[in-house]
Length: 251
Ligand SMILES: Nc1nc2c(ncn2[C@@H]2O[C@H](COP(=O)(O)OP(=O)(O)OP(=O)(O)O)[C@@H](O)[C@H]2O)c(=O)[nH]1
Image (cartoon, rainbow, N blue to C red; front, side):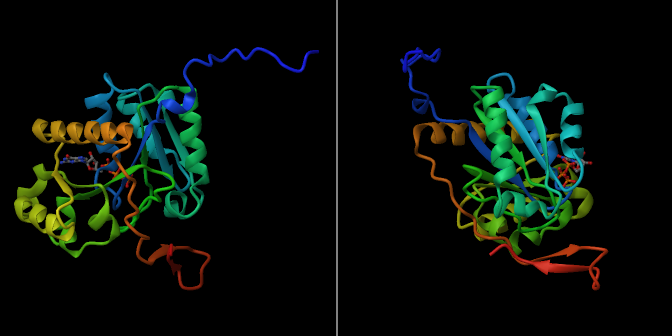
């Protein structure tokens, strides 16, 4: 056999010249609407962009199943990482499982424009490592109270976009959305804040524009991934533990 052989891969366009998919993280406390926001992005952009989704849950693939049943993307384009432990670890300290999932989905559906990665867990300050995502959205909702945005934390203060979600509920929970957005803008020193509701088409359009803008900046090389900083120490419930759980941090 000769030493050399012809590669079936075209050599005219080196793979490195096309930037890989934008990896966009979505974090935020439990129930603020992360899965729903991913569904909104898929509905608003699924026709014009090639998308993939990765969800993180401790022991289930519940979020992935919700998104598959919402019918916003082909089911194969939605994958679950079961973290088996603190889901924040899988997006912050040991991102291996998520990186592998991102690389797999990018390869299987090549080329993809963006991969949306949903954080699991319940912590108010969960942040993604810039080793995993190029940009991140932090989601709060009005039902969590108007004060949350003002109190801040790494995700709230320094994510690329802060979403104040479910604004349609504001009148029912006595929250002044304009005030909550103003407080958030102050806590974020002018970084982007978006008041969102799935009931408000204009706000969904604004979310769509933001994603397209970040994608364009990622492709042109203008976008520089930021690290919002490690999340604050937090409590994990654990039945086996004598005190019912333990506090740990991701420094
Ligand atoms: N009124 C209203 N409800 C919403 C909106 N977006 C999401 N929800 C509801 O909020 C609840 C939580 O939404 P999810 O998308 O499951 O939230 P999540 O953050 O992914 O939840 P976990 O994965 O459990 O952390 C669901 O009952 C949604 O239907 C919204 O814009 N307005």
